[in-house]
Image 1 (cartoon, rainbow, N blue to C red):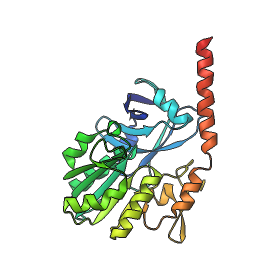
Image 2: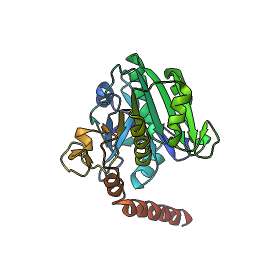
Image 3: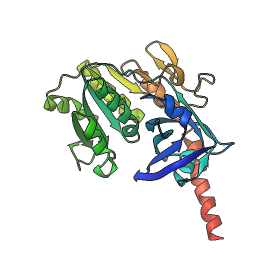
Image 4: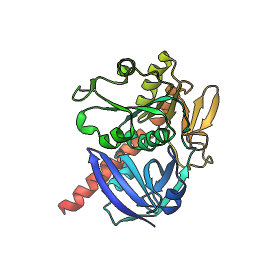
Length: 281
């Protein structure tokens, strides 16, 4: 069993969990993920590691509450335990001296982007962080990013902070910053990954995206996480999760991610109904 050291909602519907997982904390690198089960007979879900403490033997995860299992995780309090934490899984993000790297993160992807930014700075890169959200109240870890990045820009859909709009503002941000970007790394929802890759393709910037397809096994045995990259079929869990964003078949990936949308949402809604019924009794 893995003890939950910390559990809190950091912005609406985004939760931070810190777990005791010394074997994972000892080996994990930026860009890798873990597979969790909240119950012995529960489903396995992949979650990126946002931070770790090798001395204390803990890992930190930032997740969005979107379905039955993430709802169960989000409801746990510090001191609770979960039965399964498997990892680190996937290949680490390539961290090398590239020059100037633009790191784009949105939603839960801001958390998983943080150790990548930190690793890039440790390698001597100039790092420009761009954080995107629907509104200013959905940003988190701003100070952490500002401490380790050379520059930080914000984009909000409603214009409440930084640049108004979406990632289509990236060329403007790059021009304003005066940076010649050598590489772009994107973490977040599939739409952000696709849109960011579309924008960077026009600028000819090599772009790495961390894909988040449906995944069960996490070790390449089930094949559920297959994606098409270029002309090849890849398994995101063992070949990724990082891929060239200009080579990903985004239409296929978006369709596959919707495959079990109804099955995921309905149990969440009905379970909440059952909880309310029990409380009313």
